[in-house]
Image (cartoon, rainbow, N blue to C red; front, side, top):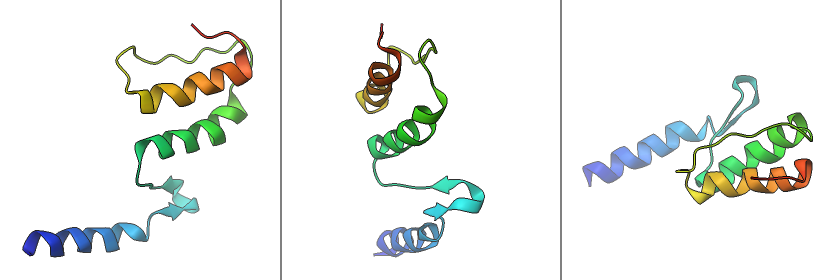
Length: 79
């Protein structure tokens, strides 16, 4: 019961920061969703054909797939 109260309290406190444009902060529940937001917002605006996106071969697919999608959209050549 103590842990549940602490957990719920932390959720209430963090809720006010979920979308704070002034601080440039957006929290979301799933890593895949967060990475997609970054890829579609920042990545799609900044990266152009010929640019390189470097990630580790050890990345979880939640981090790998969105960048592969961007690569296919913008760069036409993905290794």
